[in-house]
Length: 252
Image (cartoon, rainbow, N blue to C red; front, side, top):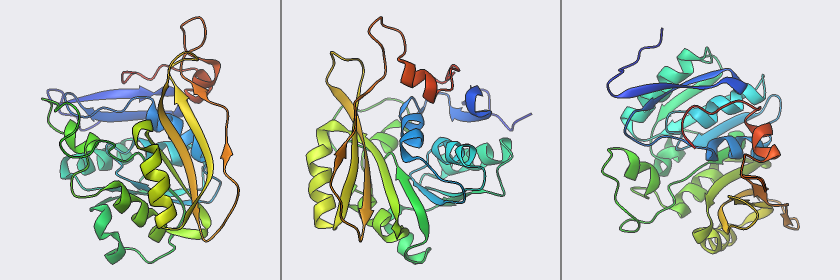
């Protein structure tokens, strides 16, 4: 049995990935974004990976499941969430391949050598301080709003950590696409792939996924849009494929 505080936490299943995930009952809870990013990133067998802002550790665990010989360093600055991530790693029997590090992205240069990872992924907080609604639920604003680290800090950390031959993959809110592109140019990160995420074919894009690289150039490939729902209102075939045709069990 998992070490679960049933008053404050829930235990949810990603059965298509054979994962059980402890989450805060009333704090920030993941939805579809981590699954989309893990699929987009295309982790390869033997990759060393870093997940910046891992939260409960769901992206790190997905990467470990998607490539059996991969190793993942999951970085989280909130002590409560780092503790949950550690318990999730142990709960899913992945302690030998997934390491949780409690630290801020702005401090990673003191902890890791440059060019340490083949793949760096992140679902960074997408709201600037003082914007958007303030959640009454503890923990949600730290996950959604930039606190000590900005988008520029996340990109700088990813650039430092990734190998020149490696890849950086992020999922982010469309309202900050122009800013991300500008920051990537300032930091000499080349955008290689871009994919927009839509609720359905008639809705504006809500999120985007992007692959960046350092020390390389290439033409940007804009991939076909990812639709969460199909024309008949149910989940799209691609979303069902990403879920491995299993219910998320953690909200949508």
